[in-house]
Length: 74
Image (cartoon, rainbow, N blue to C red; front, side, top):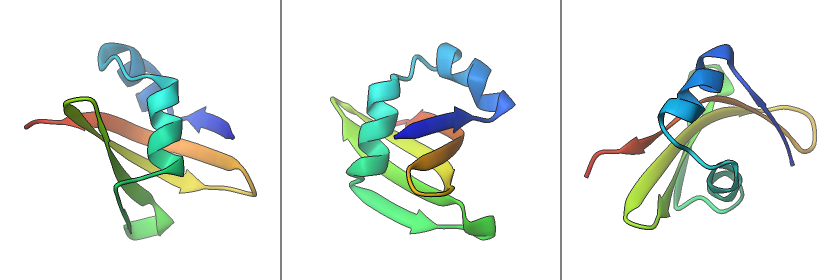
């Protein structure tokens, strides 16, 4: 699985303390998923006591461009 990140998300991943492994798991095995405008995909995955939401686009084969990701407030 090849991931690339938007400029916005490159900084946000550090600030939000999001694990690359959690991103991959959310994309591979989402608990919820839907498509939004411009063919962006939104997935949710429960990680421990938090829910991670990831917005991405799917390129060729195994390429994913992460637009943003964040933990939802409970």
